[in-house]
Length: 114
Image 1: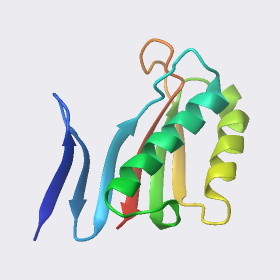
Image 2 (image 1 turned 180 degrees about the vertical axis):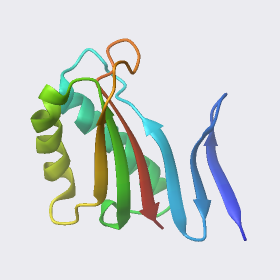
Image 3 (image 1 turned 135 degrees about the vertical axis):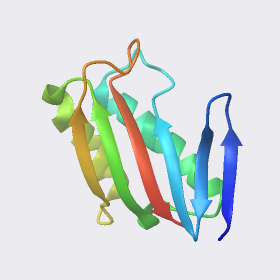
């Protein structure tokens, strides 16, 4: 059993790989002054960059858990989500939460095949 940890931060690794599966920690937008669609696009771009570091791509995403602070903004999130994934949509759950930190509207946890 091999576990590889990548992208250490002070409190976690950005992602961990086990048996060809990538577990990506919660990603948020860098510019939190933007609306839901923009923040979702930023999260997806950050995720794609992490995947590229290990030779992965968006077609290999298996699942996502999405946390959003306002379920009324779900349609905006879905527009960015479907534009990004196209036909290769992963399974997912979307969970409404009270707070993700100042200005943060969305945080996403991903699981992907290598």
